[in-house]
Amino acid sequence: SFDFSLFLSKVDKVGKLKDLKSTLFNPDIKLPRTILVIPPTVYSPAVKSHPKEDSFFMKEVMLQVKVFPWQDSDRALDLGTGSGYVMWLLWQEAQKSGKKIDYYAIDKNPLAVMAADINLVKIACMPNLRLKSHDNLILEDGRAAFVDEKEKPLRFDFIASNSPSYPVTELLPE
Image 1 (cartoon, rainbow, N blue to C red):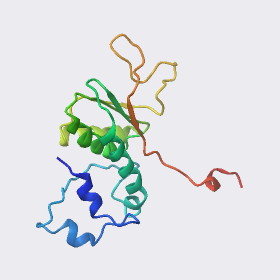
Image 2: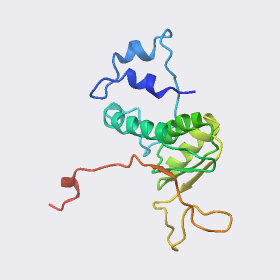
Image 3: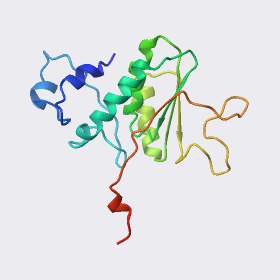
Image 4: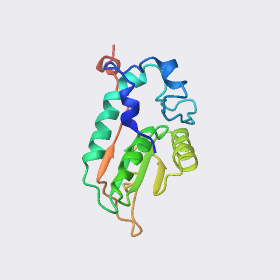
């Protein structure tokens, strides 16, 4: 089981891994070493600037997952799953509750959905995961992207989304 708090203890206040080489490649330090499949065009949590940007978000997700009052059959959604990294951390922490939780992930990039499937289902053997490639939770015809066996839209109990953000100046016309 992945201990995210151990990983975070190796991250300084600005999000950089402390002494990266001696930390990650030292066999005496018991950090998990996981390889994620990340095709081109899929967000990578391993890019140098991303740990800094993501560490605060990840800490908040892990805190919220820990204190969330999980119940059997709760539904957790990762909106814009990318490589599945956020869902993987969410699942690792949520399963400590001992409850049977159903997991859902969606991304508009089909390569991201493929990567999340490989990373979460095939490598991590994550149960109860439904993946979908779409750019919204509502399909073009107005139906929900995730429905139950009676075709009723699903409601989610916990939603995480580390969606890309862009400076406002990039969105303004020149």
